[in-house]
Image 1 (cartoon, rainbow, N blue to C red):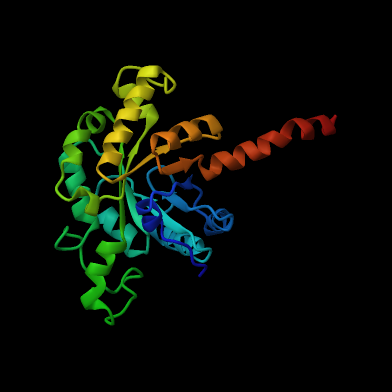
Image 2: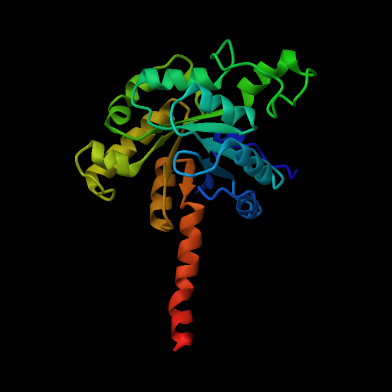
Length: 263
């Protein structure tokens, strides 16, 4: 396995990291993406069709290139979070966080005692399949597992201050991801992500998150202006276009030339 600085340590050091959403259920596709030197990949189980057996293979395909794989689970569910972490994900992105209690539940599902209530088993890929490190397994996993909250609706945006009031949140949460499109809808300008009020509120959210020592995350398409603006605000965890979308537009860009040659 190629070695890089861990994603968790990169964020703690204030570095900016980039990675795509991956919905194609293909270890080979993940391996190609990871080999570019990208910081991370997000295996999307909310919008992608892959099951956990395939997800395990996708995680390994990323890791051989020194790239960490994070899984977006389909919902804030104890069983789904447990399975994603047990097959070896570096962390989870938990969607639809609408309240402080949602955030508390996500933390509890992802972390072992004394931080949370994650189901304990060393007989998994995360546990090394054996009894050798049983006593250290919980502490090690609590230290290395990344938890990223995804605020997607009015509730999450409106309750951000309450979520950030969770005791020792910096020790429990690695990043909070704010969707610009969701924010635009929450404040009454649906889809108008360039609206001055949307940008103003996004700035406020990012600054609140960063003030707690937590990385702020968000999505950008291929737009250097947006990337510069977001990084200037202090956003560190930046997600890129999904693998299927990049593939689609790459082939689409050839189509006019190919069509002309058919004539």
